Length: 443
Length: 75
Image 1: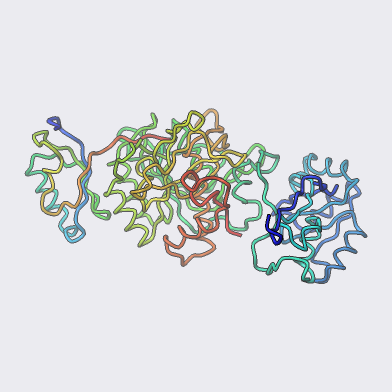
Image 2: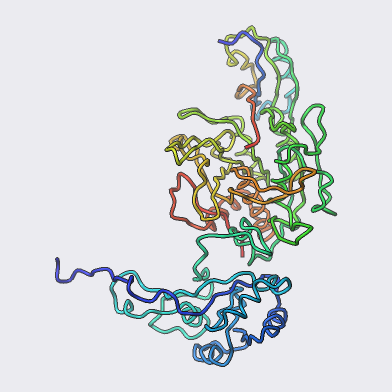
């Protein structure tokens, strides 16, 4: 061994948890909401905004109160020995709308031997040092940098949000897609569904002898995740762009099938209607070596150069547990159409999700979305269903695209494409399987 | 080689889109039935006569690409 060789630190014997709890707060909760609910269980919370930008003040605040709320992150750090109070807050009917869920605070250690490696720095101190005085003991984090908070490695449906909208980080989002038109080309929409009152859905059927009313359910499910809001009977959120303008083109029959000619007609209608986003949870299998449609790709290229981003499902033909990975489906395999893979709530690629088998000809997976056991609206009489497929992942990307367009109204479709990919959450999976990673809403 | 009528989608050259009807007429002269003309995206959809050995024979003046009209499903 070289005498100047640096060996990696072994952190396995060091403590993992500090004893404190990190609590995710609802993005809709005001400081008063938080205080009121905390007071009911005799929990005293301080707010970071009340203190000077100085690390010692935060330390004092934490010592004076039972915890501190970091409004910028929507996270509270609660001192230890308050397990019962926290349990009550995350389970009580009213309080759990404010205090969403909690997890243990972890110690963080550097991963290589250096002068900092012997310091186990708890997460809350790290956050304090971001708000407060910078020292040479901490990494150079600028205020505008993305949050250093570790993101969850898994998600679960809870009392306020289904897992899919949690995974795309909708909790911290302030945008709704207002003013942005999204087209969902699918099996139509359940025209009597109670969750879309006042949305003014514009629709057209491209299927002979069938109305837009969705007797299949697939289309309604996609509409719900792309542009829905909350489940009416429980208030649990499942939709992304809750104020986007919804355009539904029925290009698939109630049996779930259609043709290129009908889909192209739907695409033209959507573009002519001014839709900025077209979401297509449909496809046909593609063989290794098979070319993509130049007709679709030309249309998508022209759309990208003008006003519309086209997003499509990568396909469900794979059986990864059996070693089978199939190619991205038509039309998502077109280089100018954003292809969406599916991930599960543990942020693993879905077993069925197609991959970039034909990548030499540009037929790539571009991004991924929640696509396993995804809750959304459905046909009558069920009204709701939990479905799996790259079809489910695609509307999440479409919804986030609408949010990005609300935030950046002058952006071109190509710029929105780039933002979606640049702002995606990287995951430890192959780019061939998930592209840029898990789609994330804009902050 | 197909000798049954084949449903197709065809894109029109950008330079010809202002006279897309004329392009469609040329396809009709080849025995095609035209089912739709999408003027904004420059697409003609229809069904061949079945007399061609391949869809490529239907690349009349003004047609950029012609492909089979595939069946697609919800996924």
